[in-house]
Length: 274
Ligand code: BGO
Image (cartoon, rainbow, N blue to C red; front, side, top):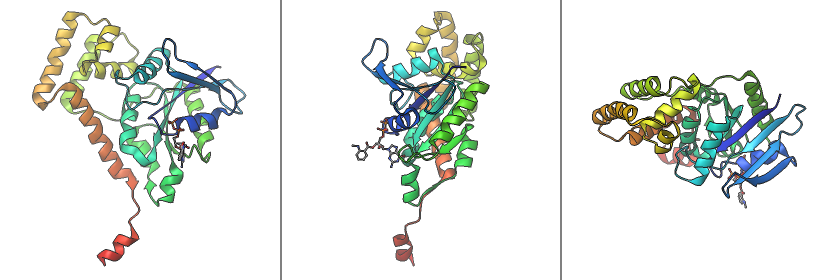
């Protein structure tokens, strides 16, 4: 069985380091079709079955604003790899988990690799990985791509999930009225799509993502119908739909970080407060 695993993460999260660690010398470099964005592929090192690793461009979100974001999101949605490894810079969780909340919605099995754990440990900080996994609804590993800590375990877990074709569903939900609108959009516009793929598209329609409206050939009548749902939420929450979604993601991330990240208390501070 041929398996494809995509590496997704923010720029500087350690994606290239992890890719090199997982593939060694078995790499091919080219460009993504039609664009001058580098595409790296490789075979998982030491694996007897054939596991392809695709290194996606470094991105901050799945919005259609930069070429890298478009390449990564088209690949994930059109090619649908068998699993995703989401590499997250653990020293910058707030910014990195924003992408995680979006990747969680595309319905592809995913493992989260919290990287730079060597730095976090050196600083005396701690991340409650079990709790983080529980909050996000996905398996989470602490890794150091640079030092080779737990990198093999992450890849093995991703391969197991890919083989099982385990459908992924995010834990995060939006405010009641937004969830109501998303459910309604799924029902009127996306019911013919596989269930695990509907949520991402419904949220994008709620955000008025024009590329998704075009891609799905939403008729003007249907759009008018969807607009009523969106407008109702915007009036109730006194904000535009894209900002409603973005703020909700950040509120969720802040609450997760508060419950899983413990910073070392500075001894210097303890002395001063005595
Ligand atoms: C430089 N631990 C530590 N400590 N560093 C890591 C880890 C880890 O687990 N993983 C990656 N890095 P990329 P993207 C650098 O290049 O893989 C470091 O963009 C430097 N370079 O070594 O490139 C990694 O592909 C000079 O650091 O990320 C790299 O996602 C001084 O994180 C950086 C210090 O990794 C980004 C670091 C000339």
